[in-house]
Length: 187
Image 1 (cartoon, rainbow, N blue to C red):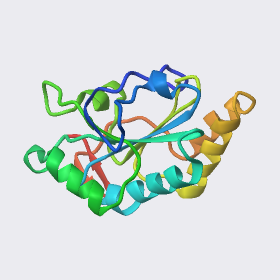
Image 2: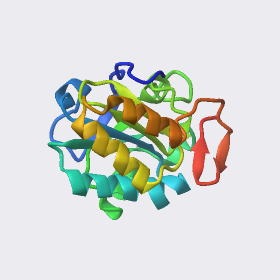
Image 3: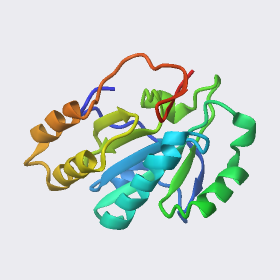
Image 4: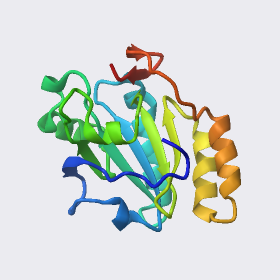
C-alpha cells in the first residue's frame, strides 16, 4: 500500500467497546491509529496494546481515534469473540476494537486490504482518510509521538511525516512466517 493512498474500508464482523459500528468516513477529520493485533502475539501484548492504550488516554477521541483490529490468521479455534471479550476485559482495553472479517482463506479481509504483514501492525490514517504509515512490528513511543503530532497539525507538515515514517522502518517486503522477535507474521 502506497503512502497517501485512500484507506480501504474496514471489514469488521463485530465491534467491541463502541455503541455503534465505526467507519473511516465517520472518523474523517481525525487522525486514526489502527492497531492490528492477536491475543496470542507476544509483541502485541507486551508493547503494541499498551502503546495503543496510552495513545487513547493521551489524545482522546476528538483528536486521534485509536481503533483496534483483532485479526486472526492462525489458531482460529481459540481466538473467537468470547475469548477476545475476556481478553479485552482483563487487559482493560478501552478503545474500540473490531474483529476482522474472516476471508475465504486464512487471511482476514481488512488484513488483506491493508497488505498487513502480521501482528503487531500499526496503520496511521490522516485527517483526509489517507494511509500515511503501514508499519509491521514494534514502533518506538517517541517515533510514534512525532508522527501523531505531525499528522495532527497537517497539512502544513505533510512532507515531514513521510520522511519520518521512512526513517522508522516503513518498508515493504515478504514477511517471515511464524512468531519471532516480538512479531507474528502472516503465513
